[in-house]
Image (cartoon, rainbow, N blue to C red; front, side, top):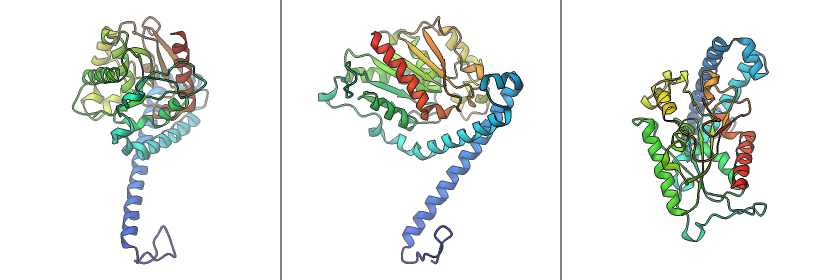
Length: 321
């Protein structure tokens, strides 16, 4: 085998196994880039089309602060970048010991590893969104550790052949499992997208009473999304904008059992229309709503500003309790 396209002038003949492995690596890489580009382009076009027809150009400009061409190109670029990050980190989400490992008995008592925090930091449970896995939290887990949270857990679930209420039951079971490791300790919940919606349902249930210290929801489709009509699987399609599931959640809504924060992006290309990110009767239900950075749906997971907002809320709640 002579010189290659990627390394001209270098003869890899003595290393056939190496070049074969590199070839497959490049093929997989370009497939990932192609799929990410296609998904980014499709969701950005649908975001632009749906919100342009729902709100009109003047209202979109008022909400986003930029012109339509700039909004389209910026959303496309940020979506592509976040999808590439997801593609690279996704395989690590299925290595369970990286995300959900029972703590040793000797260190089960929560304590602060940050000298700046006099009070112990409670355990944190992270719940990812549709089609994702525990790798969604690679950046947020880092930020939580930097803030003094020692015990951080995330789990992966399958996005097919199960319904929303099964996922809510999975969350409840994970809470009970963590409380068996940390008796008499309230947990912090943090979810993204569908994971945030399961937190909303759980926090409205009697089962969550006296178990949760605070909850944070990122990019929650509180009123569903029109994009769900194109989803793969019944779970995805159940998230239709103001559909049966959303109606059932609204009917079951009760004041949350602990302080809750919902962070939404003003340019969320997965939650259509934009107003679907807002929770009806939020204040009455014990939820604080904040507008996050103007970045796409998945990008909220990797945003320093999102992490800052989440940690500031947790600091405030924990200081008051």
